[in-house]
Image 1: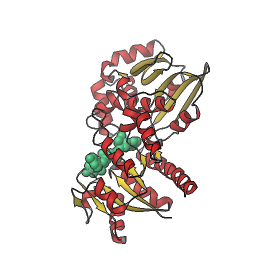
Image 2: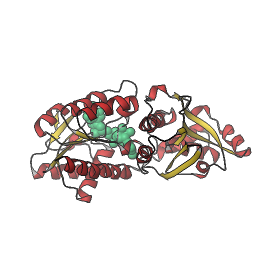
Image 3: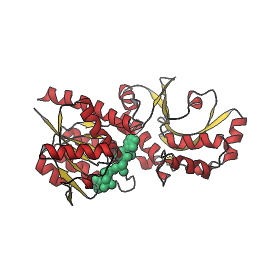
Image 4: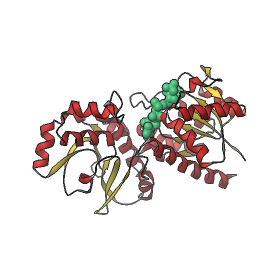
Length: 332
Ligand SMILES: NC(=O)c1ccc[n+]([C@@H]2O[C@H](COP(=O)([O-])OP(=O)(O)OC[C@H]3O[C@@H](n4cnc5c(N)ncnc54)[C@H](OP(=O)(O)O)[C@@H]3O)[C@@H](O)[C@H]2O)c1
């Protein structure tokens, strides 16, 4: 049976994923896409060709010749009756909207989902996963946490174990800013450089105010069995760290890093700048790497692996797709 898929969000991740689906020759039919202003229904070969051209040329969906302004997810679902939706919407951790409503509409229609956007799992992992499971809907979410390394698989493999603490180094942007400060740049100069090389958005607060890291910490901790929402995590912004703080830490044999911590015994959760000794496995890390430390039955496990860039996120969504195809084959 042919799997019909749609894209909900056709930005950096959606376009890159579109290219990778064709490069990998995955046996699914792309039947439509939605962006912020409207969408496209793929009805003929030429429609698909035009979508692939947009992906190749990194152009927005509204440049598609069949783009219909105001066309929304309900219309796409009604027309296509998709088996699968790839969701790559921008996050909104304050209200959760429109992401929450879009996710629920898809699940209510029995559409399986593979997501890069962290919003819904960061706000209400347990509620949403239960909701999806009651409707027998597959949720692929590997790309939500530091996509290049399978941290979500590691967390799933640790369920039921005695885990007392975790430490997460899941935000490359903040740690890159700190490494520039170690080289002598002020906080403002380091942020400016990070924006220039496009490692941070022009408004970098999603990273420097800890939202991105807190979302990932909430997801990993929830996979381990806690029912943790992002708003239960204390967040301290990166800008409270000065260049002299960074230099003084260095003199004491410490490094300041932007980390997430969960004390699972005391149910205390924190994201912010932390000093760690230079001997700690995280302290030697530079560049596009992420790390997870867990204290398991009293022993320390540390995993360090690659983070983004966007192509890795797309490839991880391919991993989810392969798992979905197996899951689907077993049920049909
Ligand atoms: N970039 C990465 O490496 C990476 C890695 C892991 C996870 N993520 C997550 O993946 C998500 C997408 O990232 P991205 O870099 O692809 O973002 P992006 O380039 O900003 O793309 C977002 C897409 O969502 C569309 N959109 C916005 N509001 C919408 C709405 N109400 N209904 C339908 N579509 C809507 C946008 O439409 P327009 O085209 O009209 O703007 C755009 O196509 C984010 O949640 C991000 O945190 C990203």
